[in-house]
Image 1 (cartoon, rainbow, N blue to C red):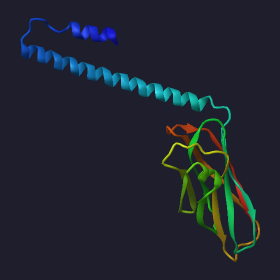
Image 2: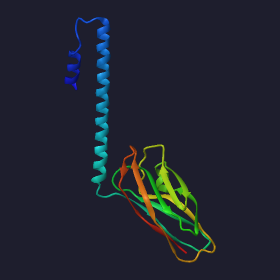
Image 3: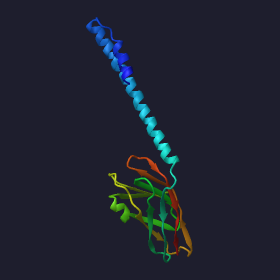
Image 4: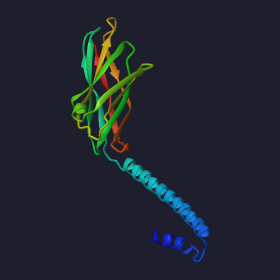
Length: 191
């Protein structure tokens, strides 16, 4: 970088008029701006390289686990969503699952592991697919434990049986927004 700047400064003509010097300084400033842009692009490329390295060299990730509960048809049941922290510093989590057709997801509340990290829980259901996001306006790390409690209500006419709660598309990210490896284990409701 010093060599480039020395070359740029050495291109300034001595003995030039004030207007010529101003034009040369403007040209130098433009060149420095271009160099700054290239350096910034290099930094972004390095960040992408680091992100790729972290993802491809992860050997063990975190685990998102839907619990298993049992009850009677027509009952309201609370199904825990647990998180087992692996390497890295997860600051936000997201997962989704298909709500069984004879059930209604009536609410999702933060579990002890989420509240210990000052996180909130939001959920939505669209086309029978529930999406749960655990996040906070902080960089606190989410530790292992129950991160959310999902309240499911079955219809009184729901046949007895085992209804799987398959987690999918789980995502974990650190405070910088980098993805962390996460696996998932499905749960069930037994009536």
